[in-house]
Length: 237
Length: 245
Image (cartoon, rainbow over all chains, first blue to last red; front, side):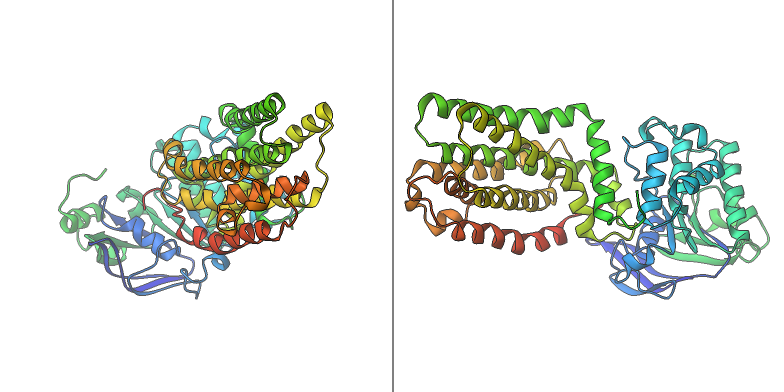
């Protein structure tokens, strides 16, 4: 579904992605882990065609995302770390806009169903800027699902959510996985990645330091142990 | 709304909603240029020095410079800061459609302001344009060039607040070009002067009001079309979509 080989990217002289090899397989939930600044978000942006790699190859749904960004939009749903919904539109207006941009039919009914799935139907008439952080993240996920994508790319979708909302978001993702969608997600919540991901990759200093099933990566200890061993950092939740 | 509505129109409709709810932005974009335009018309009525064609040209230059250009730059910088531009790039819409959708409401507002001010001019003084086609060209092409310059300026305008500074040189050049052309007889406006969009817009307005010596719109139209055709693709290519770049 998504793969990269020898992927590299620099901001000026600072190389932030230094030869990343990834292979996200159809129907799996793949978690990309790493400390802040490890290169996760930049890697996702390269996979989405938002940045042009300085070296290496990328294929998403069989296409080069830098060249085919527009045609990939129908098959790839995205949650950006920063959101990106217009603050002055209401929740319902936002979802309907994105359904229309994705050429979906029966927009009003589909928007209602999406808002219900994400527990946002009671906030439909509220402006985006008035949402709580958690509600905003759920709206981002609703927008990502508007194109009925085959692949979901989610950059910290549960960041800032309370435990209940996090559990609900993961339940939504599990349900979508059952219907055949593939999910690539970055998260800081290692226990969630351990419980929910089929495979994980741990990035450190712009490289993939470990990749495999959670059992393969954690070896004898927990995923957190493996993470700390690789990243040598105490800044994880 | 039907599912086959073009992306730019969907984005424009959403942007109209956003602007409608931003009272301060709308009042700055709508009221200030209209007031300046009224001031120019009032001054011309009082002094009669520039001629109605040149005065109408200066009104148009003021509207395109402040509503379409300054407003357009501010809008693009604000939507980029909110990550709206970056998000929209993942919608399948082309870059041109996103930019057109963002700027279309301000282009429409520029057109409405023109109708209001020239409507007042026609109603109060009975001074409707004699040749409407050059006037339409002045409004349409002037707004298009202002939009192009807005995209270009947004490329180096990090925040909407900064737009007040970054737009100043081009806005002044826009208005200055109009004043320069308005100060000399219409037949003496050279090709080099028409390269300034403000001068070209003013010249077209003078032709629309059939001022003595203002007859051939080809030079002004060509200058504005060339500017838009050459600069728009370059401007869109250099526009940054992500505030962190």
